[in-house]
Image 1 (cartoon, rainbow, N blue to C red):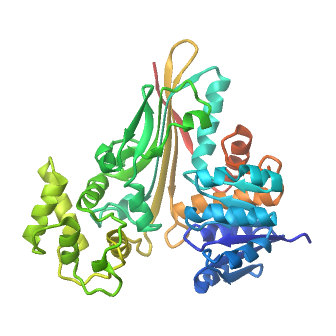
Image 2: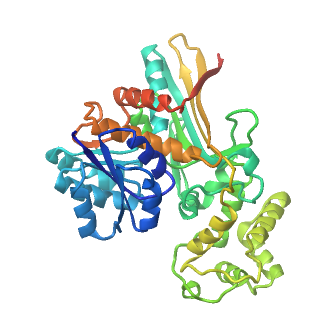
Image 3: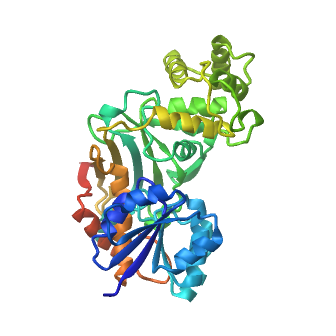
Length: 454
């Protein structure tokens, strides 16, 4: 038996579906490595061909040794570590898989990876990942029928199911790091609109959120994120004058996050008065973060009003109530984490987590405005509505973890479409068709519709 040794770095929520999928392969042996051994042991429990390993990715010597002992390494740790993992993997001739966007640091390894005969496969999660599979499918079909994609919109949200979304002011629950989720809403965004490149600063991004209809029964708002401009080239739609990729949230979330940004809660700057072990109340932190006159509720609210510049009384009242619900005006002692963002993130992880039996929802929709040869236009949508399983895989874990497992298995099998030396991602029709067929076998599918024509 030709055993394939697969190393999984990280034991977060998407790791379990990935590991379970890979262990279907009778020739696969999986090692799950995590800084906390008990977390890794939990993932491999009951699997005779799986092993837990205690490993800190910050320890280069230990990491290098572990990577060299395997045929493939899947990096499910924060993206900032991917390039280092890939560098060590190139040295030992180990293939690499990540679910993250290709960073400049990863892109720079394309030549060395080619020279070493190593594949660095990226963007095989949900967003990025599954989104590519169905964008490329529709675009290829439009082009095959001599049509042109004039406008392209793609919005994705990892959300609580509607019935689980109304018990907190953020209208959100964290199935992944609150820190990462909040930071993703505090970045700038660039996109194409009617042929012009538009940039929205992180300060203004949440204010740009607008109602967006995906399916009946949902009250979504949407806002752009990251840089959408390169996707005109990635998706081979040079004819498009509008290209926007962004995020979905329930109504009320962006206003709440905008207030946290305006007040100063999303700062990652270390503060002496938030040093771990410091005895400090939430109202005192709120005073320090916002530079309020005192830590009385009236003074804190007055400062929030001044910083946020509310234009609607309703929004103001909802935000104030939300801050109060989080406890930011209270005399309760906080657990200081060194900076405002980490301190708040730990609090929200407690308050806004999924409860037993609650489901999450991954909603992803592409919208294409297509112009045909005769001058008529159609609007085509391609939509995934994926609910998690109560007390089972979350929708996010399944869509990311299973997709990653599928891509890894194809690489393990040496499939020529995937197993190419260098930096690889699913933007071509051949790789997208291959991955999409396997993803659909796992029950992850999109519904396509033509909304109207003109």
